[in-house]
Length: 394
Image 1 (cartoon, one colour):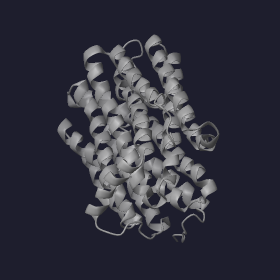
Image 2 (cartoon, one colour; image 1 turned 180 degrees about the vertical axis):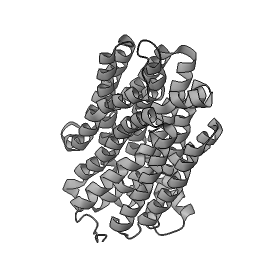
Image 3 (spheres, one colour; image 1 turned 120 degrees about the vertical axis):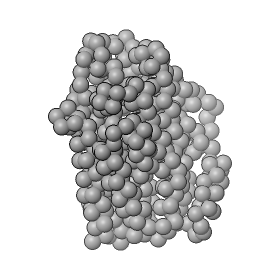
Image 4 (cartoon, one colour; image 1 turned 45 degrees about the vertical axis):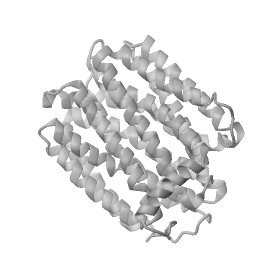
């Protein structure tokens, strides 16, 4: 049965690990498409740009879901929000599996992204009820679950796509949403709401929080540029690997996702180093790692070794930047943790959607060198934010 929680009194380990797993299963819906884009393009007889837009619409939907759905966790039952979203996901994933044209897939990919935001209900939930000394660690554990889901999604979808087909992958995803809903119904407790007022007042408070905290604006921009750089790579990798000299299928693209496991491991440990080294220094290291990755992607465009090494670096860099910029924000105003997380993650995924769009345009016009240039520019933009004059909590 759901446990009773008190703010700041501690978060049960079993519940934390369960939510970490469900966070991974939920966010996986955004990334199943990446190894399958070339397969989808070929079967539906469409262009690489339109296939790339599957990932773009998914990321865009996710950004809007973060902005309009996550704040509700301060107003109504978290459990109700999660269950409604899982129900919609079952329908949208099955609709993609049955789709016969690219426009239908675009529409339901957007809806899938919109309703896959559950991890960002769990993260501020864990932060609010954890003991202060455990807050960064517990946020890191759920974030590690989320990142593991991203990695596993690419491997699983690549393998399932190669053996069974992309439609079957989306049917499996719908089944996982049913199982997740049943688990949430059993373990997730109802908690007191953090906001008194209506939805309109709740949404207006987002503007107040955004204008009040300079650290929120800066941290979100820095992380968004890093995530845009990361997504720039993954949005075009399937097209790159399908051509010479690799001629690889979706299974290989999926397996390359395993190289990012270092990023998931990093996320569970970065939190303890934030007080020692500071957000700016850790962010600068993350951006430099991303730039090094793009150097490898450009110089070693025909080498598996360079691609693998670059994936490790870009993943560690991006995950480190996300956690070290996100975790300190929960200290700004604990009672508004869902709304602060909403603002951070909405901007973060707008950055991801922009990186995806930029990647598709660069690939269509200049091929892989264009993608490398676009990704490096975004990583450099993230680095530039650490060179601004130092202010409190940067």
